[in-house]
Length: 74
Image (cartoon, rainbow, N blue to C red; front, top):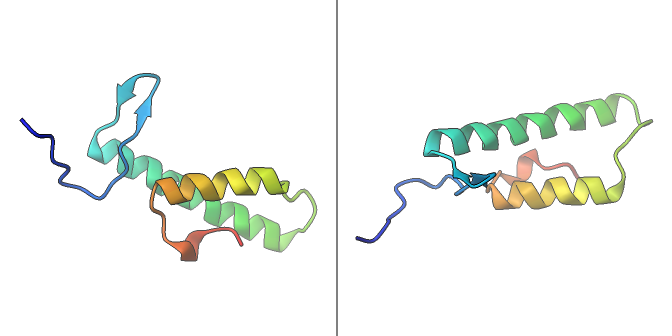
């Protein structure tokens, strides 16, 4: 029997456990919210900005989770 995805949510496995569609949606929303909050903090105070490798890793995760470009840190 072919496993057909019914959702556009990312397939996420944590420590060997496959997340459900709803759990994957929660992870996507958490990363998206974290990014928005972090970007607001960077705008409010330029000190303590994450280094480029941290931002690069976050953008990579966003792409994997298919988070809209409008919510990426620039």
